Every structure is written in structure tokens, then in C-alpha cells.
Length: 290
View 1 (cartoon, helix red, strand yellow):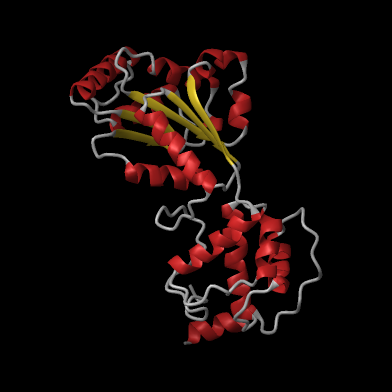
View 2: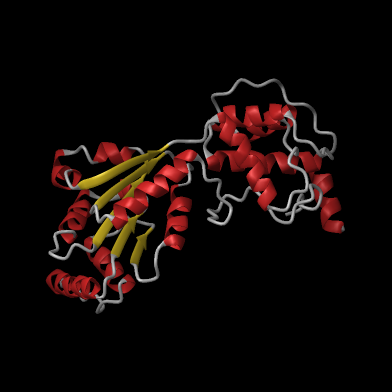
């Protein structure tokens, strides 16, 4: 990234892609990981994890996967907009069963044999469905029936946005809702932890100084982001780019104000942005030239 050398960084600190190697373990994250691990290890069946967009649910899942024993048979579905046949085809592929041929009865028999084999070998089976709020009611029912096995080795994590909880209140999903053994809602960072999060990302990216963002800038980032990690990343990344363009080594409230306006985040009252000392395009051209 063009601003990395300017700020003394080894890599981009605020990438939007989930990175379990750079994760700030807030109290909420620690509790969520503990709930997921307990739900799995104690074989609680269905576990529900919800959180607002950008709070780090997918990052947390990937971190969890890294800590599971290799003997755990995991199937992770990141796009739940599937038909019933697509769902069974995907499961068969991920669990190395015979290829799904269109016969649901044959698949369920193969799946039962698979679970029985895992039980004998002391293995557990985990099915994780991300963005589960997008599941159709029909697929919710297929998933519930999938768990109706005599072998207690299958755990199912339903992960999604808060509307997942509302969807599960539908009378059509009463039977599934009653089988949820654990629930956890992931909250955004409080203001103090927002500052810790920013410093950790800088430190893990090779920063030699952790005051790149001053206190006023961090306070403004929290107000604009409401503590949501993905939004924090967006604002901080834009702020570093703007600071680079302005030839300014310290990110202050003026730069954050400008970035909040550029990114069109609402819900925050800000002063008019300070003028940029040097146009961004000029800095980009200079960087490309060098």
C-alpha cells in the first residue's frame, strides 16, 4: 500500500478482509469464542451467534477453526442461498461422502453411516452456516431434520445478523428454535477498546510508533463507527491515505472529519474538514513515479 512506508508500516493495517492473525480479543470476543467452544465440546446441538454487520463474526469463526482438533469434521457454508439439492450436494462434498445423486433418502443413509463412523473413531462433526439469516424457511427445516440422528456427534452453528433471531421467532421454526442450546449476541467495541483495537492493528503491521492516531481522532472514529470493527477499518484506512496525501504524519480529528464525510457515514456531527495540504492525486503520482 502506498502509505505504508510513509507511516513506517510493514503492511496494510486496516484491510477489510477477515484476518484471524490480526484480531483484537475484546471481552466480547473472548466470551463469544468460549460460548462457541463450549457449545461444540459439550455437544449442545444448535448454537446461535448473532451480531451486527461488520462486528467480526466470520473472523471469529475462522479463529475458532484454527483451534479445533484436526479430527473434527467441519463443513462451513458461507453462502446459504441454496436449494435443498444444492445443500445436500455441498454437504456430501465437504464431508467426503458419495456424490449426491438427487436422492435425499440415499444421502441421509450415507450421512447416518458417516456419523456412526465418526462416533466409533471418537470424532465430532461440525456444520457452520454463516449469513444464516438468509436461509429459506424450507432449508431451515432441512437442517433441523438433518440433526435428527441417533448419533450425538453433530453440532450446528447458525451465524448471522440480528434479524436471524427475529426469523427464528416465526411459528414455522418453533421446533428448530426449541433445539437451540446456546445463544450469544456479539456487541461492537466500547470506546476504550476501539483505541486498543487501532493500536493493536498498527503494532501487528510493524508500526514503530502507536500515536499515529491522536486521542481526538480515536474518539471521533468511535463516534462515527459506533465501535463496529469493519467501519473502524474503513475510516482508519481512508485516514492513513488522506494523511499521506496531506503529508501529515499524525492523524488528527480534522482528517477523521474529512474521511467520515467522504465515506458518507451518518449519525455524527462534525466540523467542516480542514483543507488537504497536498492533493491526493499528486501524492499518488509521486508514489508511482518513485
